[in-house]
Image 1 (cartoon, rainbow, N blue to C red):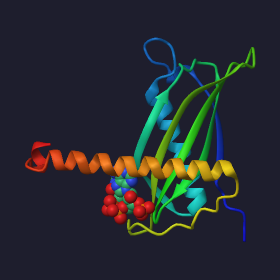
Image 2 (image 1 turned 120 degrees about the vertical axis):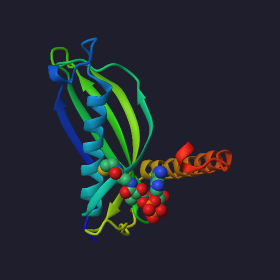
Image 3 (image 1 turned 90 degrees about the vertical axis):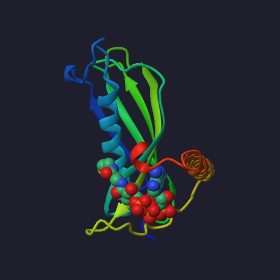
Amino acid sequence: MPKQEKYLTMTVLMTPDMANFSGHVHGGSLLKLLDQVAYACAAKYCKSYVVTAALDQVFFRQQVHVGELVTFMAHVNHVGRSSMEIGIKVVAENLRTHEKRHTTSCYFTMVALDENGKTIEVQCLTLETEREKRQFAAAEIRKKLRQDSLEKIRALNNDITEEEL
Ligand SMILES: CC(C)(COP(=O)(O)OP(=O)(O)OC[C@H]1O[C@@H](n2cnc3c(N)ncnc32)[C@H](O)[C@@H]1OP(=O)(O)O)[C@@H](O)C(=O)NCCC(=O)NCCS
């Protein structure tokens, strides 16, 4: 069986056009790059077009500075029928001191679509290491939490029409 394409790494230099008013890298600039990395990782894994369905637990742990070299490490943590959870860890490197900092983590849910925009089944994920088994189990917990919270909020808004939401 061919090896599954579960990992993707992308490195980008933080340039002045990515800065916010304080001179640090804008969260929105990072989110755009994160989305591109999640897209590439999921599309490479399932060999089809994918869309972003959800983004969970974006944790901006530390600020990223203009001039730093930022590496996005993405991994397919979990696969459902058509959805994939992509976990991304972001590490910023100071090019003068070589100091590396873990600045951001997040989880994207990407869904595979065919050329007509219909969801399609993606290949099952082979769990090869203890770490991958733990990541899969953690992703299942996040999926359940997301579904539970959506149901609870829907129940709260039961008597409200879509337009009023
Ligand atoms: C994501 C999308 C394809 C889901 O369509 P849908 O009709 O709800 O499809 P389904 O109910 O069959 O769900 C498909 C999968 O998406 C998952 N999903 C649907 N809504 C979700 C949500 N809010 N959060 C996380 N996962 C979700 C389902 O769990 C399911 O996973 P599974 O197949 O592994 O079990 C659709 O909502 C969509 O096209 N959204 C717009 C995407 C977009 O524009 N993204 C930004 C630009 S890329």
